[in-house]
Image (cartoon, rainbow, N blue to C red; front, top):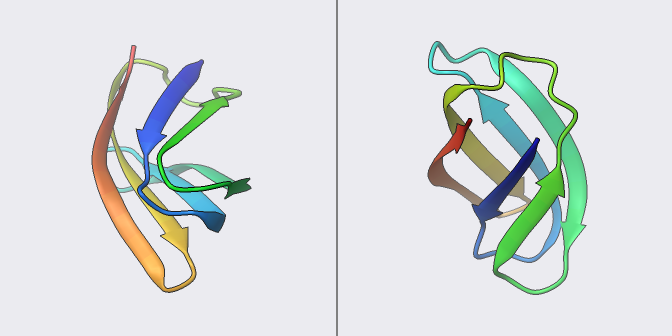
Length: 71
């Protein structure tokens, strides 16, 4: 499963993906060089189809790019 999230931040981050009922289904740590797109191959351990909320946490720069659709 590949997905892309536009973060607009750089540096160390934690990527949390939540299902619509707010259960966390993915928690990943990583690093972004420069702001822009974060793209990662993901080992899916949850039903791959549907709409998921994405939260990116990077120190003081915490923001939600909105939603990602895994299909």
